Image (tube, rainbow, N blue to C red; front, side, top):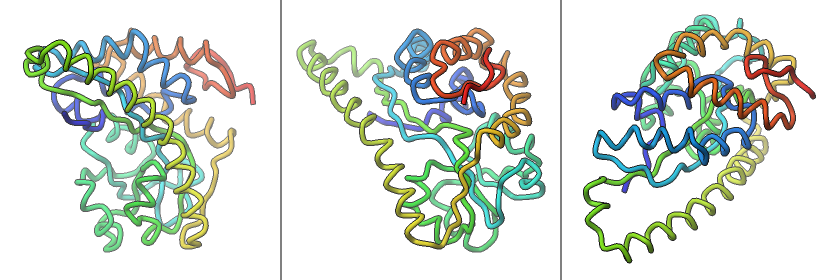
Length: 261
């Protein structure tokens, strides 16, 4: 079994998974979970079967935040910055929309690259930001919730299908329990990490207000249309519909509603 990040499947040729990289596609966690647990999540896993892969569960890390050695409060603040991304056409387009220069780089190399000025900034859930000690080499962190990082637990389809039914049933139950636990601790890990970053005092934390998020969203929304037909218009618009149904705190224009908070 493996649990690669969802961005990896686009590189594998299953471009539909690039929906998870679209900026501000998920306005809140409930929209995200309904997408993963519902028909869209099942449809995406079905796309993997032609590759000999069976999807067992979606695991959560959290929403991504932006960091750099200068404040990132408006889209104009990104202009000219070299921003590290993982390999993803959507993430590349996202950075270009902000006026930044995307730099594809292995995650293991990011700390050193930030330390040496090879790249100026990056984006991560706060749990990654803290555990990788990026707060030591990044002066500013913006809580933007602009993107999402999650994983898919996968297994070789042929291997799974030849397992005895009783063993497979036991593993399926274990996966349900492990997934529930993982979803429970993911948010806590990010909350705890943010508190530790603040306590360290090396990084200024700026929480992007609703007005700022709307400005960022306006700049980034064209990325949705750019990849709509690559990912599948039905998938993207299906998530818009879920977001409109949830409408808990705020839902961005493009999802069918205006903000309510």
